[in-house]
Image (cartoon, rainbow, N blue to C red; front, side, top):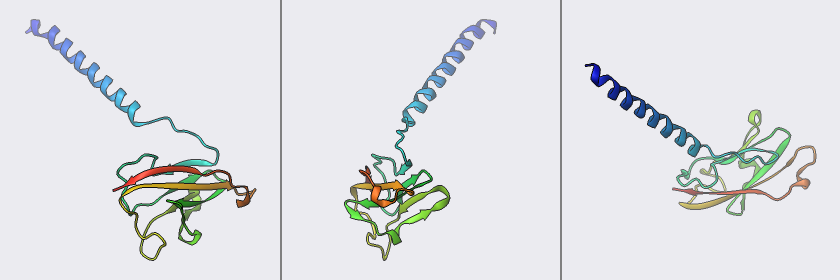
Length: 136
């Protein structure tokens, strides 16, 4: 039995090394480095998403002291149809009955986020932060 111990230990060590290598490579592939843009914490769905459900919300979380509005496919989302969560400064839109956009068609859609510092007001808005996703 003692002559099986060194080969068994070698196989076990190689298996452990392969396991660690695999998961370390997968962790790096899943988390691209975030790009920080002043005023924006995150946008959702992430740019390039290919399996977005047509009835889900899209939008952004802004840094505190910032406000914004959304357009999708060059259509302005009315302020009274936006969902706002002040605690996390989230601005989003969910298509649905009775809204200007009741549902997104399948295919590519692009969102424009126009945002500004609250203290400066909406007249200080600059170029939008734009991203696209594919609805299925």
